[in-house]
Length: 124
Image 1: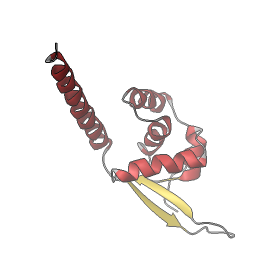
Image 2: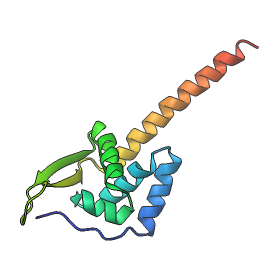
Image 3: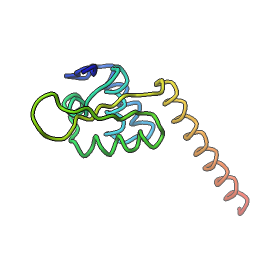
């Protein structure tokens, strides 16, 4: 197996999570991005352990990240025993691109809000 095991997040990852949260990302998405940001590949279980998220929260976050094509998801058969294959996740775009996409969305949203304010002012 080539994935890296993560046991805990450090101060910089928690600061990253807080900043993502201030940009209106959900807690699970922010935590998952922080976990993905400094590993090559990681299992869902390792994300759960590092972030304190539950499995359904990791799945929801991954759907969000996958919607933007930011992650690659692959399955690997377990080396021992039976059960479901292990899901491995990898951030496939640089974190800078993720941040740029978030920035572009916020700028577009703010432009629309300002246009609506100007339109309201025209009624006064």
